[in-house]
Length: 222
Image 1 (cartoon, rainbow, N blue to C red):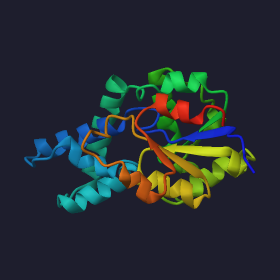
Image 2 (cartoon, one colour):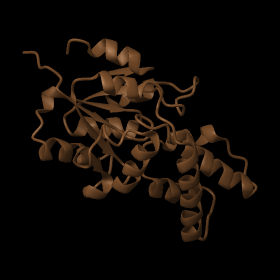
Image 3 (cartoon, rainbow, N blue to C red):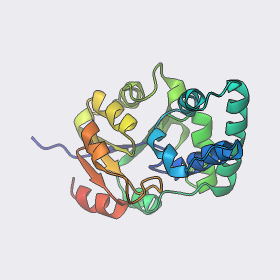
Image 4 (cartoon, helix red, strand yellow):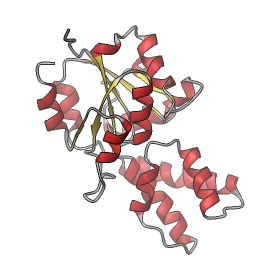
């Protein structure tokens, strides 16, 4: 029995906005200023996690003693970069505008930041407030399935008619745990050429696309 795909749930960071590279830039600048040698690519493995979790992990790695100060400073740097340099992931706007499906966001970011991000890149009218689901609306963030289950339950979506677009192992795992079909999309700049897309397959992505044009082609007619 074949289901039509009627609903698409987008992750936000790295899928709609190219923000993972900005977070990496912020962290690498921060630690390089402290005298460590840290490349932006070294941070790509943290993509998909909540920023506070990344801060926790890096505090241990670099023996940061004043975690509050680190948190305040890094959020300031990220927010400044975000307001000046945030761009859409290549091809996403055209894809969404061509798509006739219902669109939702399911993200490990908080709702305020997502709304702010959509404003900056000019997509506020495409994702109304009630179509945005964020980690501050559920008990457990990704890789737990809570965010995706909330999108499904609040909108009475049929799981077999819904797909998820993700760019991180953390996100793929969350969507799979919610019983959803997940496609990887690696059009964001944090997916540099040497990065192996098999990491998304290993977490259970059905297929991984390098760009939105290929995704659109593959979903034609479904």
